[in-house]
Length: 73
Image (cartoon, rainbow, N blue to C red):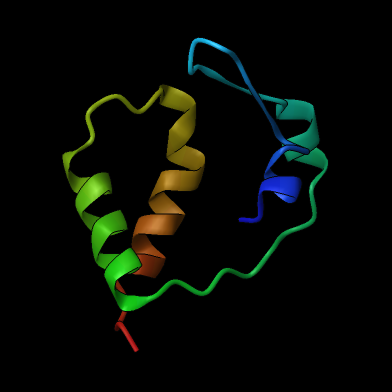
């Protein structure tokens, strides 16, 4: 995602933390994203190994995993 677009949804703090503007995210239009094959593999590995998802993340993690588990073109 280009930095200009990303900055509409997140704020970077000097200590490296990132704050998400949840209201901006809720109001955002859906976007179609095309990943390179290696990006798909990295995302699949991250989703499999990451243990720090919050309870609310299920709403986006599960659909993303289903899409990524499809055939890699």
